[in-house]
Picture 1 (cartoon, rainbow, N blue to C red):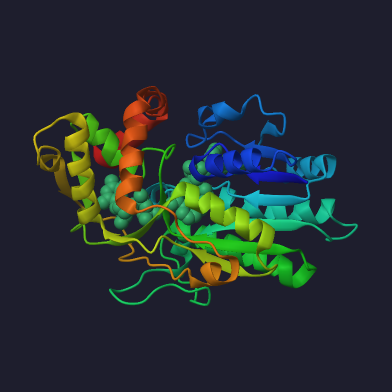
Picture 2 (spheres, helix red, strand yellow):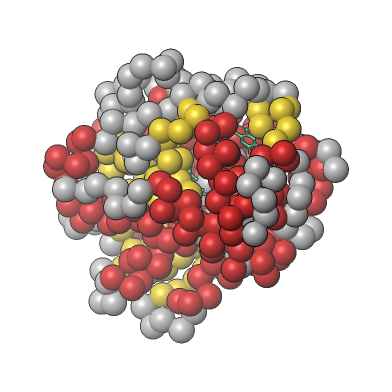
Length: 348
Ligand code: NAD
Ligand code: TYD
């Protein structure tokens, strides 16, 4: 079994690669990644010597290169995670999201068709998507697999478009596909532009914590390793052509999560209680800010027996510990491009 994982040097991708390389020593795992600002081979250093792991630096927007790679490597399956993934960056530069998330996905679908033209038996194209394609909820209800798509940000619009292409290739060409739509992930190796690692880094450095709007937006948070396990069960046991929603059943208002994080950080850093909360700064709301996401993951629980493993408080402690122990990693990823991104987004 030879599986291509795209975007494996990113946050979730690195956990998925690690999970597959360690759990399936008989599989060959190839990771293709462009190594953008969000992709970092440090995230996979522990796997460098593994005989069943192989890295290819490549760009999924290069259609010819993707066909060449697929034809020469003869993959049995693809787990596609490579994407531009940050909503704020998509507001600043939507075109890049169209290129990677839409065109990149179509290139991979074309490459799979070209390489698998003798027949699709035993093949699978697994597309990793987000709950953000469903739009925003009010204070009630949850997204199910049949909720209509209603994306609001350029990021979610590009992911929705890529999901549609994946389904279209299933309907039109019979390409065997499966899609999962997951809620917000957290854990080690997340780039410090997303809420949790950004705020951990800022608290540590005594920098303001920029809370958008009133901090009342709600997200459903999932431990990233649980997402990697869900991808494993869907890859092996999911029904072709189906969609599975993955979520933590773990909704938090941003401000409540931020206060909990401040409290954990005070304790870990030996600061007086309440010290880190003083860094909270209210800033202008994100344009088109989705109010609430909540995932009904009963289908994957019922059909495939998957459930989240970790309580959020425990996961957040583990996450904080990892970032505090990984100062070198943080220093590396926050040098260079990060500084100009940060200045542009938040000022000094
Ligand atoms: P990330 O930004 O941390 O990583 C993305 C990876 O893709 C990086 O390693 C980057 O170098 C690579 N990449 C970007 N453009 C590329 C290109 N043109 N060619 C090859 N590689 C390229 O993202 P993440 O948070 O790990 O998200 C991974 C996937 O999961 C994405 O598809 C995202 O939409 C989806 N997802 C993320 C979350 C979340 O909470 N982070 C939740 C649900 C779904
Ligand atoms: P984020 O981690 O960017 O994930 P997403 O927007 O994909 O859900 O943001 C999570 C929530 O935190 C979202 O409601 C926006 C909010 N947020 C802030 O209040 N301040 C920030 O600096 C960031 C990055 C996010």
